[in-house]
Length: 597
Ligand code: ADP
Image (tube, rainbow, N blue to C red):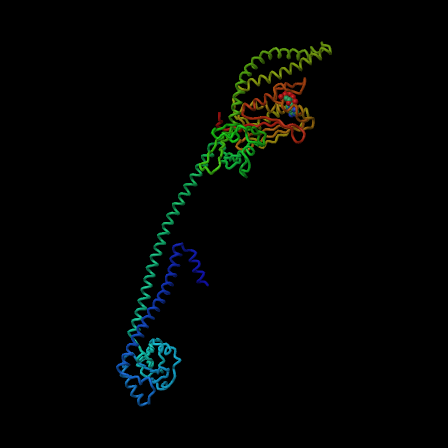
C-alpha cells in the first residue's frame, strides 16, 4: 500500500516526458517479454518438429537396414532376448536410451521394460497421432524407474513415436526416448539469442521513442514560450491602447444601428454610470431621452456624412448643469457580414462653457463696473450730504423744533436715504469686486467673521445660529471681501425671514470627485423661515428683485452674490427644504496651489 502511494507521489511529481519515459519503459519491457516468449515458443516448436523428423529418419533407416517386420509381432522370451540384441545393434546411439515397439493395433510387442510387453497401449495420445502417419515427439522430464538403458540423469528427454510402413501399410510404431543434447543446447542458445535480440531491439525502440518525445516536448516548450510571449505582447498592447483610449480625456461609446450601447471606455462608463450594465440606448442612458437625437448621424441615416456634431445639457443628481459635445462617426464594419456601427466621442465641455460665460460676464462686468463706478460716485456725494443733514435734523437739539408731521416726513426721508445709501454701497462693491486680487480664502474664517458682524442682530432677533463645518480647512480661490459679502447677504436674508426662536444653519463640506466632476466646497445657509414662494424662485437672482417693500430691500444681495460666485467658477442655487424654510447652496472649486487660468 505504502509502495503504491510512493509510486503515485513520484508519478504526480514527474513531468510529461518523465511520465512517458516510465510508461514507455514498462510497456516496451512487457511487449518485448511477450514477443520474445511467443517467438521463442514458435522457433522451439519448429526446431522440435525438425528434430522429430530427423529422429524418424534415423529410426526408419535403422529399421530398414537392421530389423525385420517380425518385431511388430509378439515372440517368445528367447527371441525377445535376440530381439533385444538386434535392437541394441540397431539403436546403439548415444542419445537413445529407451525403445518401445507397438504393433499397429497398439499392443506393445517389445519394451526394455518387460512388464509392458503384451499390453495394449492404443489409447496413448501420441501413439494415435503416429498411426495417422505422422512422427510425433514430446519433450518432458523422464520417469527414472521407466527405463533401464538410461545412462545418467537427464533433465528432460525427447519421446518420439515413429510409424513404420511397408508398401503403404502400417506395420507398427517404434517409440524412442532420446536425449538430443545438440538440439537442447541449440534451442537454449536460440532462446537466449531471441531474448537478447528482442530486448536490444526493445531498448533501441524505447530510446528512439523517448528521443522523439523529448524533441517534441522541447519543440512544444518553444511553441508555448512563443505563445506566452505573443499573449503578453498582446495584453501589453491592449493595455496600451486602453490607456490611450482613456487618456484622451473623453468618453467613447460604440453603438449599433439602433443606438444600443455595445462598448464604452472607462471615462464614458464613469460619467454615465455604465459600470453595472450597458443595457439600453445611447440617447436613453446618456441623455435621458426617449427618442434618438434628431441631429444624430444614425437618425439621419446618412452614412455618407461621416461626422456629426450635437450638444447635450444634463443636470446631475446634485442639480449641477453639465454640457457635452458629441461627435458621432460611422464605423464601417471591415467584414461586410457585420452590421454597421457608430462611434460616439463625448467631450465634457462644462468647464469651457463656464469659462466662456465667465469671460463674457467679465467683459460685461468690466463695462458695467465702469459705468456704475462713475454713476454711484455722482449720486453718493449728494445722498451722503442729504442723509447727514436729515440725520442731524432728527437728532437733538434740532428735533424739538419740528412738528410731529414734519418729523415723520424727515424720518421717511432718512429711511429712503439709508436705502439709497445701501443700494449705492452694493453697487459700488459690485463694480469694485472685479478688481480685487484673488487669494486662498478660508471659508470657515469668512463664516465666523460674518457671524461676529451679525451677532448683535442675531441676539436681538433671538435666533440660534448653528455652524456645522465638517471641512474647517476648506480653501477657495477668490477675493476675501467678496466672499464675506456673499455670506453676509445670505445670513442677512435668513435673519429677515427667521422668526424669533428660529434657527439658521450654516454647513461647510468638501464634496469628493463625482462622475468626472472635480472636488468642490459646498456652503449651505438654511433657515426656518416661510421658505420660497414658487413665483419668487425664478426671479431670486435678478438684480433689483425684492419682496421687502419699502424696508431696506435693494434686490441686489442675491444678484451680486451670484455674480461673485460665478466669477470664481462656482454656482449658487436656492431651494425649499423638506422641512420648513429655505436653503441657499453655494458650490466653489477647491483652491489649488497652482491654479489653472
Ligand atoms: P433683498 O434682500 O434686498 O430683497 P436679495 O437679492 O437679497 O434682495 O433677495 C431677493 C429676494 O429673495 C428677497 O426680497 C426675498 O423675497 C427673497 N429671499 C432671499 N432670501 C430668502 C430667504 N432666506 N427666505 C425667503 N425669501 C428669501
